[in-house]
Image 1 (cartoon, rainbow, N blue to C red):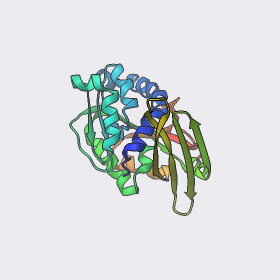
Image 2 (cartoon, rainbow, N blue to C red):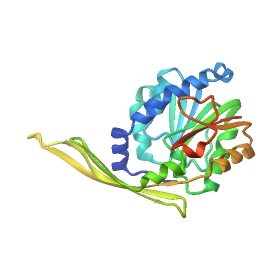
Image 3 (cartoon, helix red, strand yellow):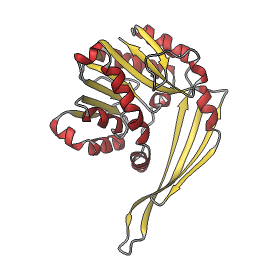
Image 4 (spheres, rainbow, N blue to C red):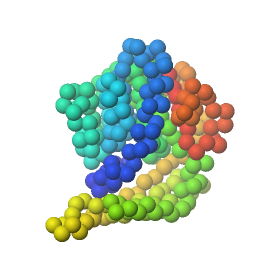
Amino acid sequence: MQAYGPSFARVYNKKWQLFAQRIAPWLRLFYESQPISQQSRVLLDVCCGAGHLAAHFLENGYTVTGIDLSEHMLRYARENNAAYAATGQVRFVQADAAHFTVEGPFGLAVSTYDALNHLPDQAALRGCFESVYPLLLPGGWFIFDLNTRAALLHWNNILVDDDPECMIVNRGLYDESSGKAWMFISGFICTGHKEDGTPLYERFQEMVYNIVYDLSWVQQTLHEVGFGLVYPAQINDLYTPLKEPEKEGRVFFVAQK
């Protein structure tokens, strides 16, 4: 799995927190509507990044364990949730989502922002499912999102995001024959200022890839691992299975142990 470097982790922490902040309430409210939530308010955040999603659950009284392969992302996760880390309410562990074990059990496991599209192949994705399943309580939930083929078709473009704090250039490519998309992300981020106020910038670059996974295969594999109820949904309605998930750009799989 990809592990982001220090410069890109700085950019991610600064620029891409809004997705986690937007979806976290939907995930929490769904979970709290389920009976298991009365038994457990313990969350496993797989590919936790800079800890932005974890922060929402911590603020609402959950105990959280986050895992990520990037030590640089984990540094920001600990900084962003320092008060909770100090009391032991949260812990962040360096681990590969394709195969890991941590101390559980958990009532809810999540993986967001198409993090599992970054796993290199079906074996790795199945390994993630097999790692999560035994850590859940009976009746517990695993919710994760995936970019679909429909979404990755739009990676064939160039996008520029420019402001005084950070300039980002995204150059994307999707190869339909291999089912793989690449995004070359580069730019400059402000790291401070000289005595006269002139900003200082650091250059960064990162190659990010997404793998297309057939959604019917994902659903079947979750069942094979042991999950009972499994269906794809939209974030704003996690209760209702999608009839044609492949037509969506992003789907959230909802799986119950």
